[in-house]
Length: 587
Picture 1: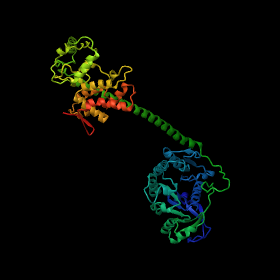
Picture 2: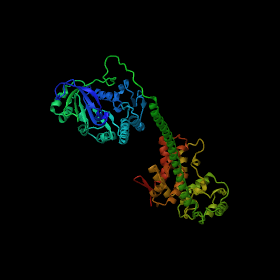
Picture 3: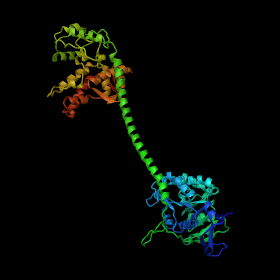
Picture 4: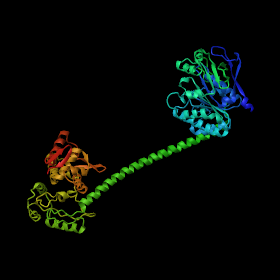
C-alpha cells in the first residue's frame, strides 16, 4: 500500500444537532480518503445558499494543495476564484477566460489534465448555444475516459448542475450518457466523478444510489426532502430543513454512520457569493503558463483558418450552384427552341408542297424545285399589287370551296398583277405553318396568306402614323384570322381561355390528334401572326389584346380595347365551343 492510498484531506468538523447519531464528538475533524474521492462517485446537494458550492470548493482546494489535478465543469462561472491561490487553466467562451475553446480543443484539454497535471475549469456558462456547451462537455469526458483506460491515474471530474445532464425525467443527451458511463465504469480506470445539484429530486436516482459518498445540505422543498427520507430515513428528512449554512449530512461507504458535519469555509475568493451592497473588488488571480495557452491557441487559430476556408469554399460553391442553375435554365430554353425547330422542320420544311392553286406536291425543301415554283409564280403574276388587289384577295378567303376558278383564270382577271418573287438566300423557304390553309379545292380568289404576307411580323399590322380608325384594325386582323382554318381557330380559342398553354394541348383541344409535328406547325402560324407569344419552357400565351394595344401605342382606353379585341375574337369564336376552359373546333 502506497502513501497516496492512505492520504486524506480535512474538510469539516462533526456538528451537533438533530440527526447526528455518530460516535464522534462534536468538533472532531472529518477526514476524507483522497483515493476514494478521486476515483469514486460522489453527490453534493442542497438548496441555493446552503453551502454545496462551498463544500465542493473546500474539497477541490485540498486536492489542489496536495498536487492532485481536477477538472471542473462550471455551469455558472463561479469557480474562477480558485485562481486566487492556484494555477488553473480557465477555459470557456468568455473573454475573461484564459482561452476560448470549442469541441476541437477537447482532446488537448484531456491531455493537459491527465498527462501534464494541469487543473482545468471548463467554464460553459458563457456559451449562448446549449448544444455547443453540451458537445464540449461530451467530447472532454470521452477523451478523459479513453485516456484513463491506459493511464489509470486517479483523477476527479466535478459536474455542477448535474441534473441538466442526468435528469430523472426525460431522455439524456450524449453528455449525460457519457457521465453515466463514467459513473459506472470510471472507477476501475481511476476516473472519478462528483455531481452537484440543488434539486436531488431532478437527478437520476440510479446515479444517486450508486454513489460512494454523499453530502446533503439544507433542503426545504417537499419533493427533495422525500428523496432524503427514502435514502437516509424520515428523521433526517425532518432535520435537514433546519440545517445552518455549511452544515450537511455526510454519508460514505467507508463509514458505518451518517455524520452531521460543518464544512470548512473555502479559502479562495468566493466568485459564486450573492453580491452585497459593499464595493466588490476582484482579487489578483494567478495566470497559467503562457506555453499552455499558446498550445491551445494554435488549435483555435487552426480552427479559425479552417472555418475561413470552409466559408470561402461555401461561398464559391454557392456561386457555382447559381451558375449551374443559370446554365440549366439556359439549356432548358435552348432545348425548347431546338425541339420546336426540329418539330417545325419535320412538319413543314420536309413535306411536299400542298396541291393548292395548281400545286403539284413538289418538295419545296429542294432548291431546284424552289426555283421552278418561283418561275411558275412569276410567269402567272407580273406587276405591282394595289391595296384593292389585296382587299379583293382577302375578301376571297371565304369563297366557297366549290369555286373552280383556276390559277390561269386568276392571272387573266382585271386585278393588277402580283409582284415577281426572287429566290431567297440561305435555307429553304419557311412556310410559317400555314400549310394547313392550302386546300386543293380552294377558289382562285382565296387569299393566299403565305404568298401575300411573306415573312409576316406583328409589326406589319401597325397602322400608318396618325391612323385612328379602329374599324381598319378590326378588318385587317379579321382578314388574317379568316385566312386561318378551323383548327387554328380552335387552338386560338384554347389559348384565349387558358391564357398560357402548350401547342400540343391547344391542338388536342381544337379537336385534332396529338401529333406534335402538326401541333407545332400550326402553332407557328399563330405565333408569327402575333396572336400568341412564347412564354418559356415550351409554353405560349394569348397575346391578341397586347397586339391590338400596340396598334395605337397604348392610346386606347380599357373599354375601347375590349371592344376592339372582342370584334376580332368574334371571327374565330363564332364556330368554337368552349367546354370547361378547353377549346375545340366544331365538326
